Amino acid sequence: MAQGLQEAVTVLLEGEHAQVELADLMARVRRVAEEVECYTAAAVSDARAREVGWDEVGQAAFVAPVTARARWRRSEVARLFQRRHAQQAATDGGSAPAMAVAMRQGVHEVALAQARTRSLAGALSFLLRHSGLAIKEAAEDSGLSPSYVSRIVAGERVPAWSSVEVLVRVLGGDPLDLYALWEAAQGLARAPRPALAEAVERLGAALRGAYLAAGCPSYERVSALTDGVVDASIVEGALLGHVVPCWETTSALLTALQARPGDVRGLWDDTNYAFLVCLQTPLQDGPTPLVDLPPPRPPFSPGPSAA
Image 1 (cartoon, rainbow, N blue to C red):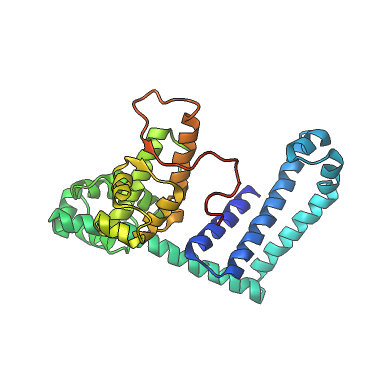
Image 2 (image 1 turned 45 degrees about the vertical axis):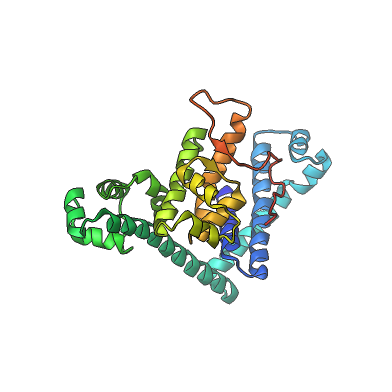
């Protein structure tokens, strides 16, 4: 159930960044709501199986025990799961509307994977051009075949990280700057949340990777592409890892670089989370970086931009 909820939220996030039609967006919101309902019922069922009483369930869910008992009694949970199973079966079974939705989502996922591969290839291509090396020379120095390097920089292959790492070093770049691009191209899940210093480093590297993929335009040009929303000094500070902008600024910066904000949101969230933790637990390893984050607020409450 948790996996289904995660997938539904991912589809919603991608729709938000793709600026899909409102009807499509609301359909994705309804799917998230349904998955939340199912996950909640599953969590309560697990708790009841561990002999957790209705008083404790009600307290955890902020409802009266009698309400919790009526809402999540065994027959109601079974009915909810049967409905979810029937909806999934209809999609798998090939009804025309469900198949159409599945096909659109499939096409979207393929296009998204291709775009992520092109971003990685764009960054590698930029480094290759500015290294002054020919493909054959870069291949020889990195121990890769020229045809393989050619396919990598053309976006025809997503190589293993070891190949990206050695190739980037040969081209005079920092492999960390391309790690988020490679991770997105591979469709890999991120590691658990790191400490603040590491989170800031990862986020800065991801922004620099997007900057490389965009061909390293001037900071003033990037600022202009955001319609002045992001000042050139903030662009520079964010790329150098000196400043962590709020999410709205970070999203505008990534959009100006023709990158997908959703691919970096997790890294920004890690940094935001680590910073809030450090408000109560001061850093011991050096000074705190300059951080421009929104003030702490309760989970799931609307931020400056509700969408």
